[in-house]
Length: 467
Image (cartoon, rainbow, N blue to C red; front, side, top):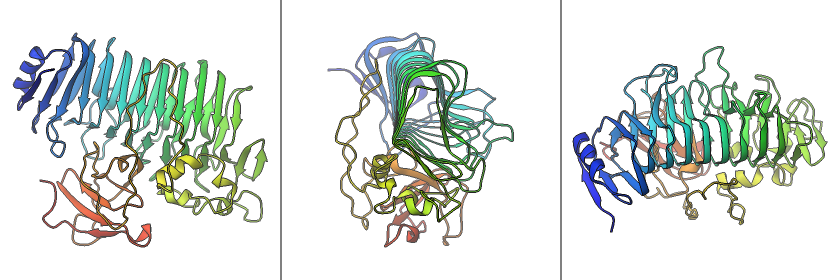
């Protein structure tokens, strides 16, 4: 049986790292362990560093995995005490590291409204890396990766950024699936902000089920591959993007490109006022909903419009409330019964988000050369009047296993009145009871879903909050 070490301090952690063998586990008791550096360590099976108490996770100020193999970090909180210089990294996986898993972790810069410095999670020149179910916030760029082979980026939540939620380049064999950009952008005037930006050639990629709904700014572009590098064998499907830039999906140069079943909507009367698909000639583009100045049907694609209720494919005829603008929520995009939006675009992904019914029964394919991503338990049917059982999901929320992927950023009342808003980043799952939580103040408030999502009740903090 593999060894397990329990540690309570940074010095004990360093000792355990010298003793642990392949397949072993190091459990970190609550506390601050400073900066972690694992360099030139070559294990043959996963060594796991895990918080012993997921309700009070071990904290580190930075993590470096340098030429390391078979390392798994699970349920850690990596919190920098500074904003960092431009391009600094809070967590980095570099220099031929391989077989690395970062799961259920929270990674953030200083929570002070400054977003000029850090990359959250940075991966460079490494192979067989999986980033799963992490929460990255209060950084300049969220998840950044260059020159990575066999790469899985799945069910991560990135929010409160100064530029890009996700920035990639030089990837080979990648699955980017069911990630969420929280939609809160604090960019400088000249920033080239994107939900997902690809800055160099990528090949053999599946980009599926990702969601970006603009909250405080319509500026971010969607999935942007605007460089002159040649992109090869790219599948982009079932993504939902709502923002104000014209490049909802943009591939400048590429071969074997498929773009299908995406819902790409513009914020009406803001920004470029259109959400387009721009891909090289010869690409397959089918069953998408995008936006232009007038509604039309192009092949199997719907071009929606928002300025003429008498014309076809009007927002109001397709969706419940696509006019919501910044601050839009998933339920606003619920299709009008009988409309083409119920069978076109990313309607299956939207159903998963709203928990209207299970998603597709077929198992998700993986990008060529990648390892299958971790299995996610099926979501249980939820009672909208019941508070879910506590289960830490590496963010600010507690809830069942399906709670975290449907999070959206909001403000939270931590005072006696629901109008007493804080500036802290907190989350809740639409359509279910849950918690608002302010991690900095150490408080949380219960939310119970009532007859309508708009009528959720805030119960101010009393005595049942995080210490």
